[in-house]
Length: 156
Figure 1 (tube, rainbow, N blue to C red):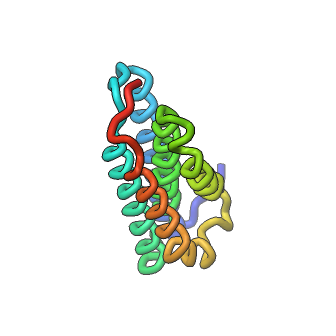
Figure 2: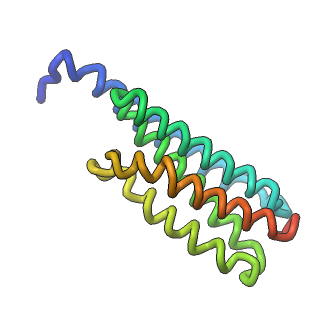
């Protein structure tokens, strides 16, 4: 059995906690999704709120990376939450008329492709920090603005 150096024990415990938290949240989300009855309708207002939540998580990740790089195990947890929220946004948008979402889906798909790399070791670098400062918030704002133009509700 491998021996953990005392200086690395805290980081290992934090990484384990972050992995447990991320997995638990995903299981809870999946359980709610598959056990719930269809809500009957999806609101563009709720989707816009989801976009704001994604931006908030991206901002949190930026702040952690910029000001507390020792919290690196929690980077994966936040990035995983962003990835899951983008997946949820994509799934719910598909209930809208294709003509209304044809310019939104490619933007979300590019973000999903980007965030799917969250488990790669070299993902959390200065390039990500720069993207979190400029490109990602701008793209998420663009997605939210396009969502506000959608019909208010769509029946499922």
